[in-house]
Length: 412
Image 1 (tube, helix red, strand yellow):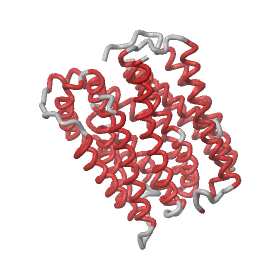
Image 2 (cartoon, one colour):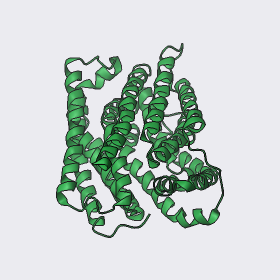
Image 3 (cartoon, one colour):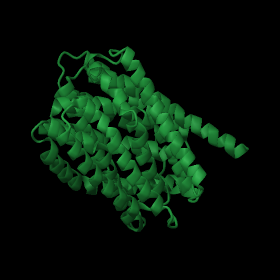
């Protein structure tokens, strides 16, 4: 009983951060989406999605080793933090080369290089370390501190968007500087007040032992965000900035439904690291997946109803996409389930299989979305077809994930 009370206390501490983050994320979205033009919002949202994907290259994925250390061997946090800093420096040339390659493939004709570089810098070198501080606090079980940091960091982004709204000039280039400032302030707060104080010690032999697993995780994370965000890249490349802006508005509202789901997944992953057979029963698996789908779908349905009766509730630019939101009714649940299933393999230490699965899903998503974007020209039907695309992705993910989970978990 005491263990269950502790688990509930931890969950409510963590979910409070998700709730606060949701409120400030919505404020940030409303301010930014209605200050930039739809085309420029599309440019920013797509470049930001690429930046999030590219940020997983930082330190060659060694953040995963840091998270496992915080969860299982917290006395080694200082040692693994030193490893993260060293590998972070070594990964910068690869990060720069990959960023330039992504720019040439997807953004060269639509987004200035200076804007793209500024946004990737903010995501990869400023925001990603903030996520490290969040991850370490969650690994230590300090969910209240992690929740407070999440709220403060998201509030700073929202504040930056509000200040930008009152600025004399509104362009994606000027916004990128506000974005850098907000993320830099978050970084200073995260490591100044929230990161655990331990002496940094370099132990190269420890890092080498875990480097292969970290690289698998980094590859899996890049592939994960590629298959999560590839739709935005394709819409920008095929449909242009305006359609990308409308699409980004819809998918941003879909993303908001995932915030509380990710809190649940994070805590489940921690429990599975200690008890890999936690989901061995079919009833438990299906019950959790049904809950994730129901909560996600209900969230978007509620938002769709509000926007149907009050299309200007989130601002004039969002009003253009408001009639389309409800058409994506199944997308949040299916998308969140694919994300949840990827976390299960990480929890069981099956990092190479996870990377291979995500690579297959990224390829399948590319094929399906390219077909949809090149054959369906009507925007409402395009959004409606996304339900089928994400259903096929979910079915493929389910087959790959639970087939892999029949094999023994790997020690972490």
